[in-house]
Length: 282
Ligand code: PAF
Image (cartoon, rainbow, N blue to C red; front, side, top):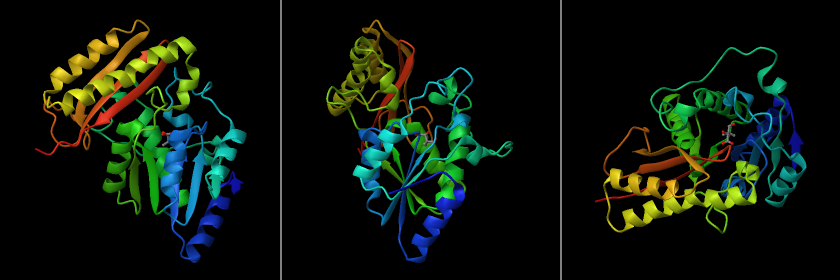
């Protein structure tokens, strides 16, 4: 496994693979890797070569967010990638990605305006811009994103479609701790007590799944039950509990087709997200 930090090194490596007719799978990350990322890497093994980027992208953090404290551990990340047979890690500096001045952005309307876009107004512009840059650098055949960041996945799919980017986006299921908590690098911020309190997120998602499984199709009823469940936890403060169409992130009232039921909840100072995507054909 190679670890490189310059765009030129990535290009040289990928160009050599492409000349040999190899396919390239790409997993963009911000590092502090966990089993969720490993499931993306394992899925990307369907390609001949696997590239992982590790870059805490300053552009997707708002001024009062956790850019400075975001956990970083390259040594641990490299070991995990090696164990999962990654071929290349791209670990650039901010200077390598953005130089000393930068004026171009990739932005999107509609899909970015609800859910996390409401509390994180610059977030998705930063994500779309860095992901476009990474796609242009790595030139993968396929790129892999977790469904835990479901709005991000919908936005990337739409961006690739709208801008005719020549690659396929693969969405991968949420990976959970044995106790149900969705894996996230930000779980490291939680104290033991907060971790226990954070289980209210998956509990409310499982409650929704069970209600829908029993035939409930009214979003209002499902969201009300989820909200009541979360409100039982004194350390939890709801940011949103919403149901939207998974493709265009517009509000829906009935559960039919691919509905994204998404929540964001503060546990102490840590903002966590979780979700469920339905697949109801009736
Ligand atoms: O999901 C993430 O970790 C980030 O948003 C991504 C896609 C790597 C872009 O920085």
